[in-house]
Image: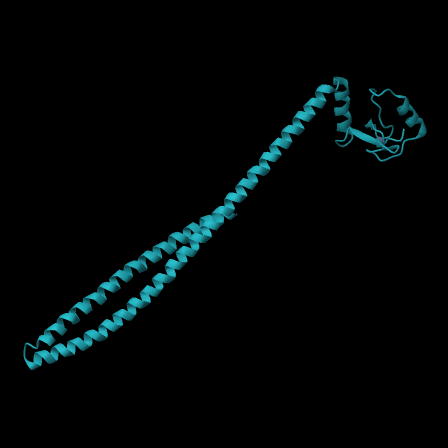
Length: 208
Ligand SMILES: [Zn+2]
């Protein structure tokens, strides 16, 4: 999501830079136009100051000087407008680049967060897998076979804790006869719930 936003921003920056470059060229051209008129006006002025030529010539020079001054003023206004546009575009590029830097940082943070989460999940999965392998190794093959069989027939839950005389699988309370039988069974004997046939795990809280 943030990465897509970043790509869109890149495009926007390229466009803004292109527009800024165009305006910069426009500004150079505009400045040249102003310089041209200024130069011509300066030449006319020095000819006028020198006072050479007929009265008619000097009058014509004065006319041209006045029209050059008007032209120069127009061109300068134009240049000012282009300058303002160039400033706006430059500011826009700067702003977009700042946003890109910020977004790039966010993408980086999100990615390292995701990597950390994945690493934790991997470690967790490894721990669970090795734990299960340890248990399987420690349990006899007969019990394992029974475990798999019960699991298949009881919705994936093969063993349940016996707590306060109640089976954790089917939630039914065991009768006195069953409890007595379980109480007397050796610790390593597999005892099962008479109701749901799940393997009963005996604990200090079984109520035996
Ligand atoms: Zn049960």
